[in-house]
Amino acid sequence: MRQCAPPLRRTFMTIPTLLGRLCNTALVFGLGLAAGRMFPRRVAQAAPTAPPVAGDLGDAFITTDDQQRIVMVNAAAAQLFGVTAEAMQGSGLARFIAGANPTALPQPASMQRAGRRLTDYAVIGLHADGHQFPLTGSLSLSTHDGRQVRRIVLRDASDRQRVQARLARSHDELRQLSAALQTIREQERTHIARELHDDLGQLLASLRMDLALLQQAEGNSAYSLGLMRGMETNLATAIASLRRIATNLRPRALDEGGLYFALQGLRDEFSKRYNIACNLYADESELQLNDTASTAIFRIVQEALTNIARHADAHNVTLNLYRLDGELLITIRDDGRGIRPADMDKAGSLGLVGMRERVWGMQGEIVVAGDEPPGTRIDIVLPIRQHLL
Image 1 (cartoon, rainbow, N blue to C red):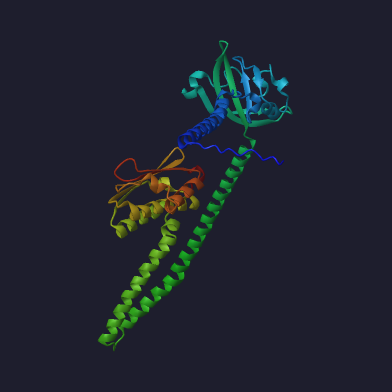
Image 2 (cartoon, one colour; image 1 turned 120 degrees about the vertical axis):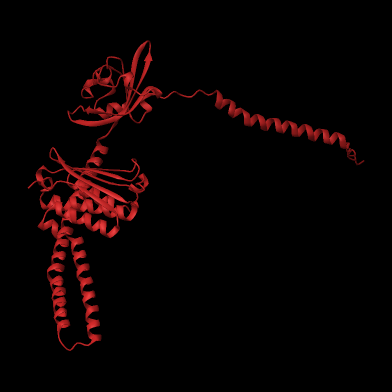
């Protein structure tokens, strides 16, 4: 007889039972997820952080006692001085830093209070092979077991010093180039001014004389005489413009009368052209200088007056030039609106740049200030012993 399988039993859940089981499953899943997230945080918070050690620092690190004996160094310091760390420990700091002694490094009274740290401290390092090299770094003080401990961080400044030396050399070369270009420019100006005065000036003067003779001739009609008078006026204007252009290029008074008379002509032309009162206080005997110095000083004053006319909105200008102990002191003052610090640093302030270059070319000093209202004051000091006649 064939046996039959037992009938399947189907289990039916009520809806409240099913919802209860789903809620329990979700609760267990949520608690597990939260625990999984929180556990790594607890572990990370509980894990101790390793304190930094001297060997981890990239800079050279040296610790000394109050007698400047080295008690701890790192590998970077040993490599910097060309020795081993064991050889440095116990040695005096003077073996590795020139002139180091208990009073050579900054004392607490001279250090900044914030953090008791002094930065950018420059010393000379002594390498194991005997050569010296520049070092910069910082120094901090602390107390350990009742005794003062100094922690010194040093950096090799050789590369920086070489870069600074190259920059200084490049700057000097640019100064020399600027001075040479100014000399060439003055020579070209002198040449063009003489050509204008000697050739074109004489030609215009000759035309004016011929025109005067033509006006005296008989038989000229009223119309012709009117045209001639107009031509004479235009010729006079052309001659005046020519003289002004030639004077701006190279004043003849600078070659014929010297710096004092050239400054007088510059003052008169400035007052006449811009209707600004200008007073010159100088002694002719104190301005007997060679052509190089006379030209530079004249251009400095000329540029200063040009800046005043363009930007200052002034009504009065005072020029003072006097000698004192082999130096020429120049003061230029106006009663205008005054120069602002931002104006002196603008890229387009070529007038001030030119003045500074001429002053520095003579190894002098210049100070431009607008903090004494009203107006602006320019103080210049020029050594002139080698420029005296």
